[in-house]
Length: 365
Image (cartoon, rainbow, N blue to C red; front, side):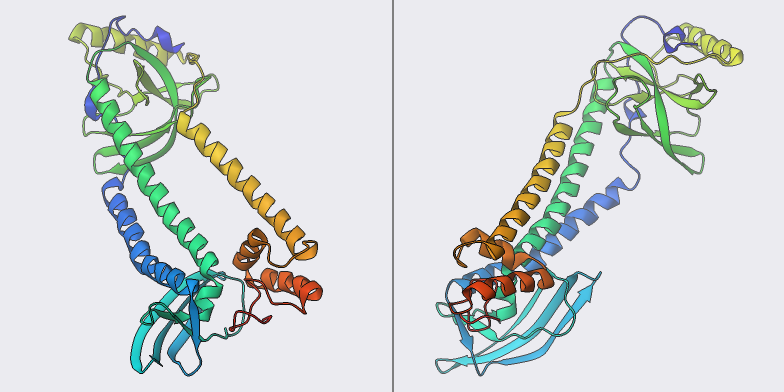
């Protein structure tokens, strides 16, 4: 049996708008993502901005008091630190707290001093914060960016589903296509199905979701190998296919049209025929092409940065190459130390560059 042999009328047809659903858990997962994104910004954003201001004109306070200072390593690479800072500057006493995280491969303790801003003495942090400021900024951007991407993906999905719901309620030509069932979840007498339109040649492998009600069940047909696959329709130019039910109640048909279509399906199922998927023009979504380009760009940028860093620590004619210093400073501890050792072998008689300095920001660490 080929899909076009199902006896649907050759006229524009509408579908039930609720035939396309949002993912299970969407309405609790989305708020969680938004809350997490807000928490990350609240947790690390002000501290990064403070430390950036301090880094522009820092002063190390030799007699400052660092209390309750501790660093905890999580997941082997993420280090979270906090401390209470007390100090006196120009006859005035200050007390504040600092907390921050960065990515590092390190064992043992960290040596650090208390440092303040010469322009705003009330701004205080640790020299460790300034040494890891680019590491922290990148970690913050990656973690926050991940939350933003997840949140954006959820918003995009919701907009697409709502748009499809509005479109399928208006009559349009229907084309039947097979879809692969990737997940099912039964809740009472309802069945939630996740499916992908990847079986018909030229499809873009888009994932969609649907909830079959108490009186509905999916329509399954057999392929050439006897495997059951879901039956769906492409409604006009909508972005997502719509799974149809075994009783064809999701399609706006007259009683006679529905009876004729069901009779053709039952006859085909009894014969055990095959499904020959309809072809559709291949069309890759713009956002998918953009994502692939972005990922390739990130990989190339990382490789280029590592190659530049290798040249900087082993061959560069100066230790104060701006790009090389920044890359070396954000690398994990052991790699950064190795790079600084290479630089010190060649420029040990001169001042240390950013990323290789001790607490005085001049000598080699």
